[in-house]
Length: 261
Image 1 (cartoon, rainbow, N blue to C red):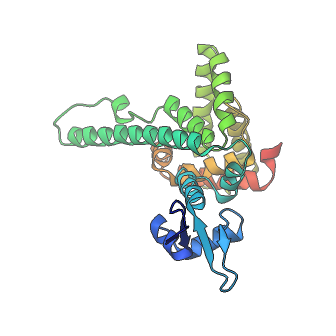
Image 2: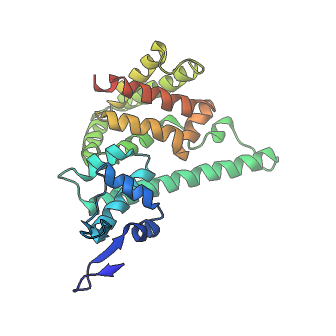
Image 3: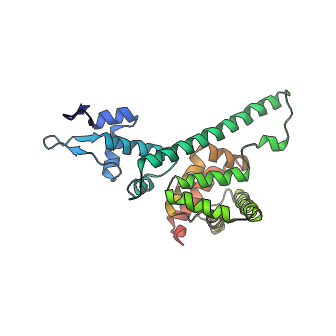
């Protein structure tokens, strides 16, 4: 690492920045190739890539959004948006991670109580067994995940949800739960089958109760359903094979262009 004459700006080589961030040099080269993280400078004599503090902050954002299950093309779109502000994004990251930590702690508590129940130390009702997996919580998961993709979704989803009556909210959540039950009934089918894709289309319409999801948001949610612990744990309570199946069905839906209809 080197610094400029004023001592305020650090400069890192590919290896130095990769080591600091816990990624590989190959990853940084790939980010450069796809336009996600360009070097701050390239050596005239040796062609080496160099990164400054601004690039390091952008890499931090890339890793935070990646932690939320966002694909690289969507991350690039968010970071390159004119309205993007690093400080505001960090506030959202903190809120999302804090919420995730709280949810995981809730699930850990449920596990601990279930273990005690199995040992005969305490009694649990069937409802107690699924603490943390209710449909209202799942609806909140999806809203929070979408908000990571576009700051505008925050205001829009809040506005829409507040406009609904209690009966509307109950209906939307009930419809969402039925969609996942219907997907369980189709496990074992080809994710591209018409009946499976029809259920995905209903899922897409249900999300519109919160916001207008872009294809990138839909794809990111599908990936999160299988990859993120709080999502996959919820769907696994319905059926162990549901997270992966739902993820593949959504990817097929988006790839077919149905998400834009």
